Image (cartoon, rainbow, N blue to C red; front, side):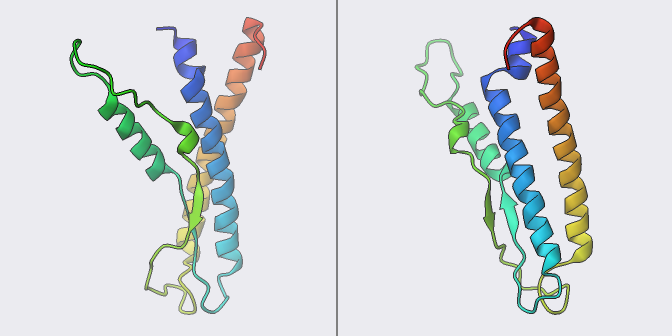
Length: 138
């Protein structure tokens, strides 16, 4: 297997760009949560992406042939169906006393998200340099 194809090929590339979209959305959601920390009754929001991705990978792994003579199921990793979305988690607690936004928790989520975003942008940049060196477009 060509390592370049594995690292920068179709599914991996699509996954990285979808992950970048998810981190951008998560950053906006966390900022909205922090902006509403003193809004009475505000319900914090979260982004669901990783759970959907795990389910898609599990479906792909379950669909692989386990024996040479078995028929493939035809299911593959369908990243087109994996989309980040915003939701309100069911959280009955009120750590902020006027709503369920916890400044410390949101701050740590923002830091974690920033680390992931930095990694993803470096990966995308490396891919572009690698393509330029090899004389490939994109």
